Amino acid sequence: MIVPFAPSERSTVGIEWELQLVDADSGDLRQAAGTVLERLTGPDGPHPNVHPELLLNTVEVVSGVNRTVGGAGHDLERAIADLRPITDSLRIELASAGTHPFARPAYQRVTDKERYATLIDRTRWWGRQMLLYGVHVHVGIEDRDKVLPLIGALMTRFAHLQSLAASSPFWGGEDTGYASNRAMMFQQLPTAGVPYMFRRWEDLERYVEDMTRTGVIDTFSELRWDVRPSPGLGTIEVRVCDAATNLQEVLAVSALTHCLVEHYSAMLDAGEELPRVPPWFVAENKWRSARYGMDAILILDDAGEEELVTDTVAEMLVELAPVAERLGCAAELADVQRILDGGASYQRQLKVAERGTLDAVVASMVAEMRAGHPL
Image 1 (spheres, rainbow, N blue to C red):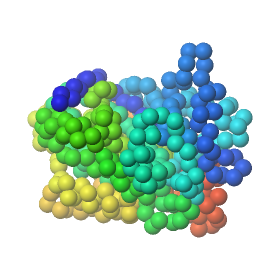
Image 2: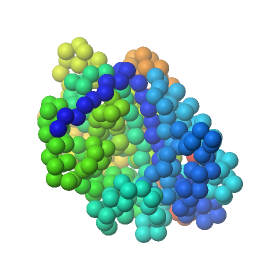
Image 3: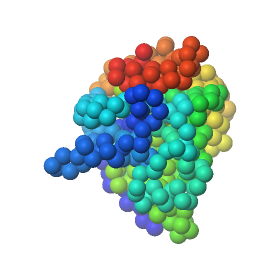
Image 4: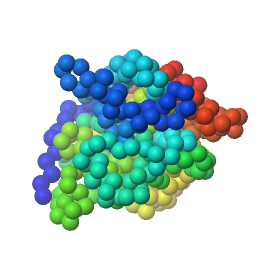
């Protein structure tokens, strides 16, 4: 099976951010996406930057194709500004994080679309647990031959991104002991989690052919890997990050992702060998990151060298500073240092819960969403 890749302009960027619809009075999730999207629809049709998702408690805001992370952020801001009058009138608050602290999966309703019904029918109990929210970053790739080497290199740093973005310590009202419980839940879907690390595009095509022929998938988009090609868009899509509670952290982690892809792309252009780690180290790093978050000690190379995630990220910020200048995202990349200094979202949520209740955690998520930055 041929999987055509539509090349994009190099290092263009787009961001997708899944938002929770939270009842302003109870703090629980509202099954109101249908009403919100209907009221948002104008004479020209549905809003181009606000989309439905699997569950009716969710809307997704998406940017257009941009040259800078800041430009993508402005698209997201405008989409949220368009949502606010509608959600405010319905007494709905917008919030986000990798999970909702106390909502129960059994009470959530699925959007009435065939592909979602098929997913739930196939995956049954696990599919109904997908009460999860993420941020997806697309980076344009100008040459198909770069895609798989770049993904291989990104797998040496994807767990660092997961640690920085970790925002899902609670599940169904319980403290899970994980920084990103979303990471552990989402990988239960049969085509989600760590990607296969193919070296040749033909091997990817063989895999897609096998999965299609045996009925595992109908379309490429059903491969829900943490990092995947998006052939129709001509991008690499990094999907490993929990949804952030605020725009500043969305853009900070997006800038780091953007810079990593461009950095490795430039290495390829210079004829340099890209880093790789064995798949067993990739899997271990994913678990360590999900469990320990900012305190994770991650495996760096095939020799098994290890380093605290915060130390590696601090080194990355220095190395990638010239790349960020070229890409126009120096300010957003600098905000990654704020996460290193002040902690990730899961740490803030746990502190709020120590002083209060899970209702207070939801209130803090709502407040950070409105403020646009960590509180």
